[in-house]
Length: 329
Image (cartoon, rainbow, N blue to C red; front, side):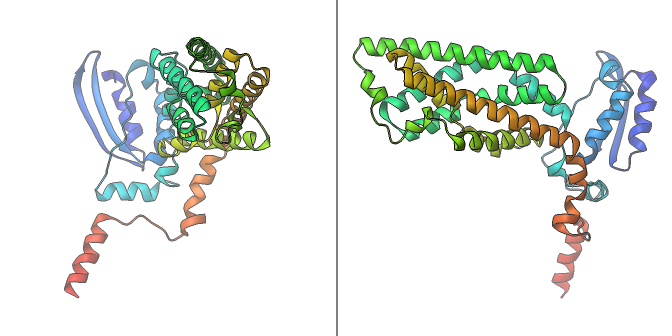
């Protein structure tokens, strides 16, 4: 912070019951010149502190860096967690959500390359009728980042973000389908791919171009899970999202349908692709809207509901005392 505004930031942090280890290094920053201020804040209250820092224009006249420690093995941290409402795992950092959404709407070279590879894998899965390759194509596909960015743009009132995300989805899928279609045409000329490879019965991969009610239900559930994982900064559930929705496999089947000009495959793949994207955007938007409105209220009462009113995090000191007592016994 500029030196003339440091006192206001320090007063904010010192007056917050859920902040500790407030440190000020006057004149430590050389570019731009100013003071370095650090503090540990309970994750449950970090969003509120960020709002107050923005009110002081810290994000404009200074700089803010958020870091998530891998561990906090000191008593004061347990006290802050007990004092802050809710549980740290349920805390939402909207600044991080917006940053990830912005990153998901950027048309990077790697995004397009991964999508082309994923659609190509899906096309091979169709030709070989391999469910394993279908799962591989789903995992490789990067499209969910753009889908959740579109949902975030709609919920956060960021039309520019929503439009960039939508444009990325459309352009990237068109590009990937065109590339794989050309490759499939070359494969047809070489005799590697035939129309029968696409139209024959495919018990393991036929579902990717036949949309039904359950396809939409899965898309809704995946969109909700992915949006919640984004809001809570959980990476593990995302893998389940990647391997549950058939957006990329439908695009691979679409490319083969165009290469062999099979109308049923083309229309079915387009319907499956559109249904999945629409379902995920709808569920993602509703989930982020719920998190933005009702989640703080739910999180603040979650410990009372699930853990009981008497639950409090155990401190390191208490655990050591118990162990010493056990040894004495």
